Image (cartoon, rainbow, N blue to C red):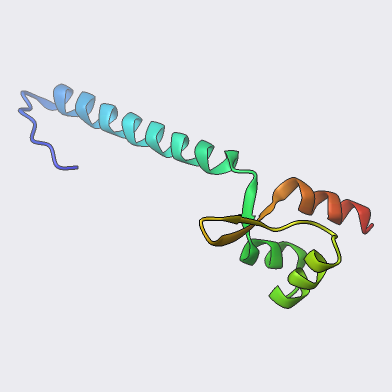
Amino acid sequence: MTQLYAIKDLTDLSKEIRKIVKEEISDNKNQKISEKKSPFIKIQEVCKLLQVTKPTIYDWVNKDYFKKYKINSRTYFNKEEIFDFLKSQK
């Protein structure tokens, strides 16, 4: 985002910099919040979380340990179901 400013003195410059920084921080926080709201994770994340391979994940899906969900031809897994599976294995 390129913006041109007419800065009268250092006080104005300081105010403008603070305003821009606050906007960027706010945008970043909003982005992180929206990312965290998704109840689904990709198979790569499940593999990393469970420390297993993709074929193992699909084998467990076939054994009904948890479900897979197709969204726009991509495969996702529900975080809560994965965590419930982890808890049941302890």
